[in-house]
Image (cartoon, rainbow, N blue to C red; front, side):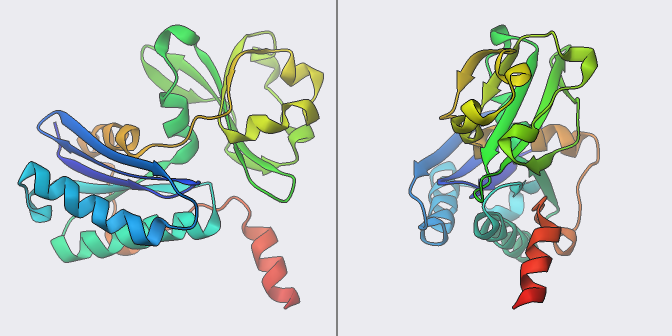
Length: 230
């Protein structure tokens, strides 16, 4: 198994995790607007406790988004800087996929992950679990809560809903709301889950150079429109 350092600052939660020789350790806290002060000390603590140098790892993973614009830039920048210093590849990990992986396997095979995107919108994606693997049923997207919709092929299935976007459940269509079984709005993306996803990606050869790492905003057109209007 690959040895991975993972970082996530995409939401109010801040976390770092170290997967080393199959053992996983994590630092996790919910402290909005303090991620720049927390993430690197977390990394230093994890490496010191494990007695391992950054250069001895196989890759650095990071939550590439969607999520807070500032937050995913922090994780991307930190991962790039650490990877460049240690000459390591990086692995971008979807925050929505990491949340889907947090669901207990016994909860169900259909999952809807959603994050509060502010501006009265949500980031969301639908997933199906098959043989222990997640399959994306729709593209990751951002829209008003009323715009969340399911593919017709799974419209009659019961879904597990995870993430802060489900605070807006009362604004979603009845077709979506009625298909929800379990709902956990307090689930955050976590670096520990991203480390395991990244280890699998490394095994498949799916790494990139640090300078190729990019945040995934999903709201690029809105961001550029605002910039043009300034």
